[in-house]
Length: 307
Image 1 (tube, rainbow, N blue to C red):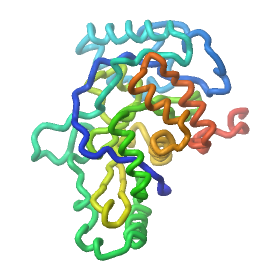
Image 2: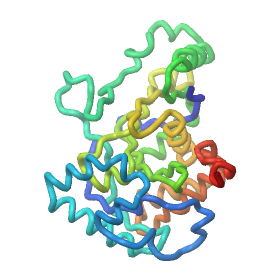
Image 3: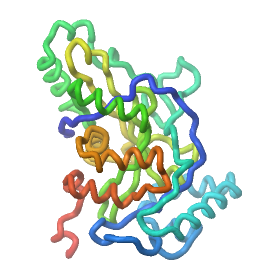
């Protein structure tokens, strides 16, 4: 059961096609084990090194399909990945990093977009907006929580002031790199705003599939009641083959951590990622995440580590 969280909304942002991608390291160990600059994330290059990634198994089929159908594209991506591994830990050039995780599906009559997610998911499809306008913000919040508390998903009711801050920042900084705690370390996900939707897909998914990489988590934001009631409603859809609710919850909570923070050093990471990519240090994202305590429940206990 997902607990409520605070999120952001991109409002009317223009959809743009994906740009070329320069990959980061696929997996970074816990921040405490990599306190300073050092050699790359590990020896090896090409497909053999890719298979060393603990999350390779989840994407093996699509990786092998790419290798069979487009061997030149596959080899090109492996070469770019090898170049990145020569860089110091915590540094990555991402000037051509992904700018839009999901292009709007063609054909307005189609209700389901690529990857099985609902296309143009409206608030009216969930809630009778006209009826709830007669209720107070607190009553609407209770209705929203009651409805989704029985569902296995992520949801939120966002205060208008926080929404405004996050939306303003999302306009100038529409993408960011998020870290999901794993037993082996951290798996990286890229989040990209597309209108009122925030799309996430894993970095290894982008590295191996490029423009064809589908979203694995989509957060839907509804500002229809923002002016009148002072709230923004949010819910989500996820690909259960890759994420479960508490993992999606961790990624969603990080949006608030980085986009709604009053700590300038934290938001500066978002600005750097979008506008000064050559200076971006992905280990700083892990440091902020560990300091915040988000995702702590995803970490196995020391007792289980020793067993």
